[in-house]
Image 1 (spheres, rainbow, N blue to C red):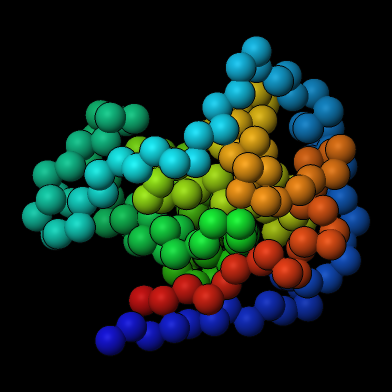
Image 2 (tube, rainbow, N blue to C red; image 1 turned 90 degrees about the horizontal axis):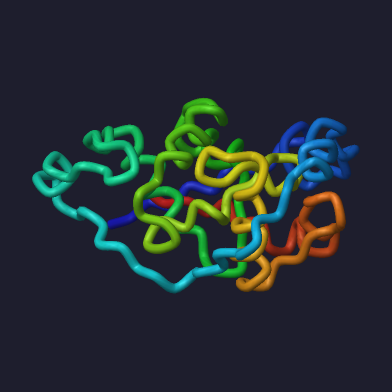
Length: 174
């Protein structure tokens, strides 16, 4: 039996009009779009489901085993439906950890784009954030994937205001 935990937005975290972060705006303005954009959202990579297969799995991205904490983050991330997004903070609140720890785990995700759609996790001020540990050229991959799933962004890399509440996901299950 699954328990649904809804992370209630607080006045300081979500659903509040926030000024755009100047450092995010500068990041997006200075990012260089690569010649080709990877917008693949359909490739499914085999995900270890059993405790034994998780212990044996070696990430091709790092050459190391995936940690228990990383699996906790990935298990939460895989719940985000197509066309929706969540924030590093919402995931961190659900996992009782820090936003940077969530971002660090997602930057090492070897199961992207599916079943672990880490491209669906953005910053709490609705900025696109990094992708695969990169905050410059690879954010265009993340943006393309999210746009292919129906999200829209302004010219500075923030989720369109009309979608911020409607597409936000925070109904994580244990």
